[in-house]
Image (cartoon, rainbow, N blue to C red):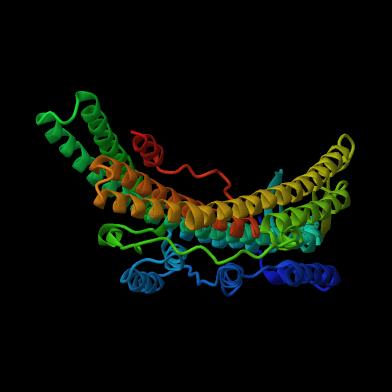
Length: 483
């Protein structure tokens, strides 16, 4: 019996050298045409550029302990002072762990793309057959030739998938920034509301105590005393609701900032930013948004990618399995056999028509999805723009009309009280109304800045247009003020 050692020299005798050269050439072409490599930054430059251009902020990907230490140091510097809206957004872009987890999707997807772009490993087969005293050994190396031919097209498809992942991660980053800005506005407005509810409670407590004493000396009946006591009870309840809203909004902001431990004791400014002096009309806002919204761009590219996939499906509909192999058979009773073989799937039962029809349906689905995305983008932008304008008009009305009128009424009533024309309870009732109007002005200003954040997000992606409900204390304040 004869033994054989499978070595490269066994596969390259002079007789088959041209064929092996052909195989080597095909392998080299596929290697250089379809082999993908890792990018230096893992595709993160797209996210960094979007943060800088659209938000004016920096974003970091913490891939090492040293990078995480740098982020922690930067976060500590920002927390050392009262937290502004811009600083809150910057902290969330650096420290939000959910956002950091989404950055890892870039690495995962890039690894999958690179793997798909690598030349498939060849297969090796070995068989040993015995016929009486004759022993036949067969060896073979097989290459997936169809995969090599399709590698340029597969590479383009995978590159498109990686770009889609970059857009998705960028959109996630922008959404976190918008949510953080809105959470900061809500938390700061809640703190202002608590301060005004405390003033309401103080006024109610003074009125209830005075009513109790006057009832004791016979200058007040039970009905008037009960009304003052009821107002005090409502004010205490409204303050409790405002404090609960303050805790909830602050905790939401804390989660978005990724803070814990001593970091949660961050300080906020005393009041919301002032309203802009005026708003600039933007008649071309729809055109601008459609040109730069990431979801619209993504839907268009998805349709184009699907069209390319359809072309690939039609190209490979008849060639599903195509393998090129080099074969060397040897026997102790006969000369060694050398050659090559090709394996292909015969389209006897499945001609690929179903796959082509499915690809065409998927493409038309992508086209309609792209059109739907554009229609929704226009509608969302109009809604956000209208809410922004209305919120500004309402906030300005509170600031320029209602609050000054309440202040003027309070000053006039104080003069009347000093002149003994009205009593203390009329003065306290007017003070309650004034405080309620100031609290309503705070909520109107809060709604404007929330609408501003929604509009900014609508210009670059899908906004969150759920109407923000004011603190529960707002309704209670209005009810209590009528007593």
